[in-house]
Image 1 (cartoon, rainbow, N blue to C red):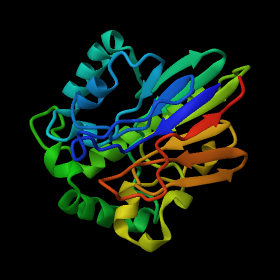
Image 2 (image 1 turned 45 degrees about the vertical axis):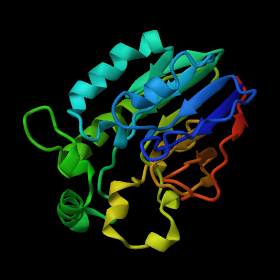
Image 3 (image 1 turned 90 degrees about the horizontal axis):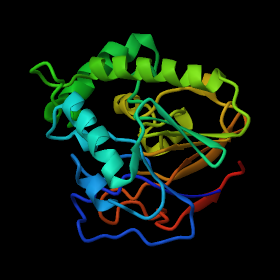
Image 4 (image 1 turned 180 degrees about the vertical axis):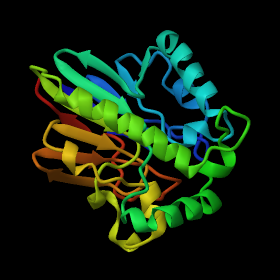
Length: 247
């Protein structure tokens, strides 16, 4: 099976940009396509299966649970599978998708409270997204969502499956996806978690969010990201990237 893999298209900043056609069987959108439902509109009735994991930017200017429900409602008529703690099997390949958020534990428990406070003050996630209870979404709330997602994902990966498993998340699952130019920065904890314990149970783990391209292996799992980023930001982005996985 051939997978066309992209993320972080940020069409809100580049509305005339178009994804080139490929010979892939499935299109993977690993989040931050555009805020709200605009990303789904861009790939409406695309002509092949589209697997869409919401990123943080989908929720900008929105109520988080409200938009999550709207994306699911719109998914079927759009011909898109929205995956957020969801599983879909296509031709013998299992796809497990979740936004994942992060646990803010990248630098350990002693710095976690500091990372929460810094993120709440400096990241747009926590000043543009409503939490569904009348307030702003917070870093601690995103860590709670991460915990639920990680528990769900661990359970699914432990379930026997006879074919290939592909994981799709928006946020990154391993410290190797934090670019070295950001070494030691507190905000890395809002981009990356360390889920080494889950590696080796999937053939491929696709993520986005970092705006840097990565392709490496951990315990037999290939970890790959192919983000466009903002206009002309990621020179390594390949809009036609296709990866083949066996069933």
